[in-house]
Image (cartoon, rainbow, N blue to C red; front, side):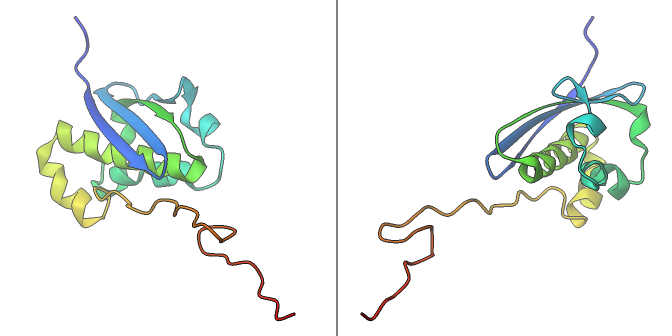
Length: 131
């Protein structure tokens, strides 16, 4: 019989993360790698584990499996954090107020602005020359 898991989807910029939580021994795997190996930048793992800090629980009681693709490092870390928070709410609805108060259930709506015609980037105009 398959073990029961809870799933949450997180998105940020171009990144999409599918997070699955089940009871277990504390394994945290991202795209078949350990979380510290996949996110080696300082502070990323602490940011990802923010939902567990907000609910005052230790993540070692859960097995977490993440599949993330698209975007860059920052987008992927924020997508995983949002997916983890959403999966915790699916697992236990009573955690929603504390996660919401910490701002972990709100998707960051900022995306890259499109390039406009006649400009070099979204807003950068060519240098004005009088002569």
